[in-house]
Picture 1 (cartoon, one colour):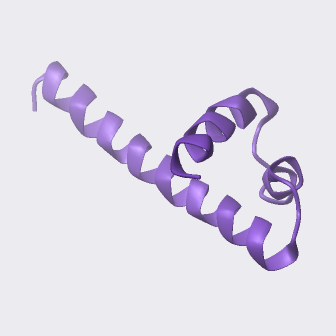
Picture 2 (tube, helix red, strand yellow; picture 1 turned 90 degrees about the vertical axis):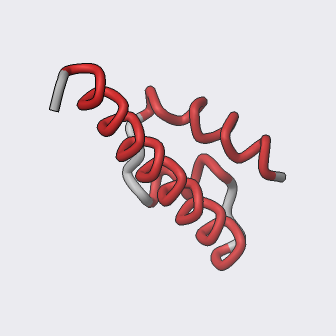
Length: 61
């Protein structure tokens, strides 16, 4: 696999993981009635990723 294909593949894997984590965050918010920040803390989301997930979930809501 050439370098460009590898980068595209890895980006797809990361996007899929981000979408999955966003679903976990939404489910926690709904099930436990917690804020997005609390849900991300429960999932041990690194602080530098918090804004990314806030932006991602804002598009869905």
